[in-house]
Length: 115
Image: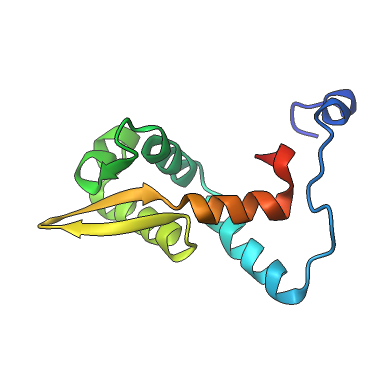
């Protein structure tokens, strides 16, 4: 079980999926979790969320994650499609911010201690 033992999980009082999900909720959760199921995407979200301005220009992200611009654009598209990031076009560049409402929905499904 990854690097956590049962005692640690008990101490966290993990309440993932504290009630049964219907078909639509399950499908929606799967989309979000698929979007986050990539280390580069998780890094992108964390970089954007932790930036002092709360947003990041697409022009700065390829160098930050060590990937090509097309690869980063592909990952950002998945995150936007899943509703985790918001995209705003400013001239030539796209700027991204975290959709905090969407993460709030994710927390409400997974339970507060998961967030």
